[in-house]
Length: 239
Image: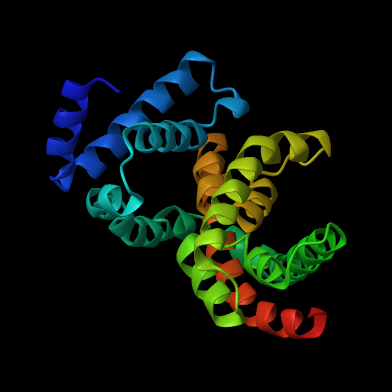
């Protein structure tokens, strides 16, 4: 890296606004690429933005802790943004009441299958016990998943990475996979995406329709509650 540019970066890195600015610019650039490519699923803006930020931090030798001093402002907004998802969900309340029983059955089944399948597959490939415990809560939103991972003896930092990857993969292939199976109902499509790909998947579901986004948000929230209950029980039985 050019010495003058390095000095400039070191100076800028002392400001907590660097992480915030870098995050916003990376996402705007990633979203521009996403639109330019016709909203192709493989051009997921979250994946591109993450890759850009990782590349910049690696190239400049900037510790993650320094970056997060500014990025934490975006992280803080995850809470209000999640609560705000209740607004479109309220508009779907009549439909939700009709689908409540089927939704709860799908939720519990999906949560159990998610944990058991990833545990058995990873175990077959020789993953260590700590990695298995870190993998178990991969399909819930980061704050919940990291908390579960810590309680059951996993690595919260590894779980955070796995959760992000799960969300990106789910957002990329989820809609196409559901379309291939003939699933046309946006409520069902959204619920499936939210249950398996949490927040990143929910953002993708809102691009499908408001109905899909609302049911995805519901699934994301409920899956966090169900997973926090079933994971310790299942891990105890599988370990």
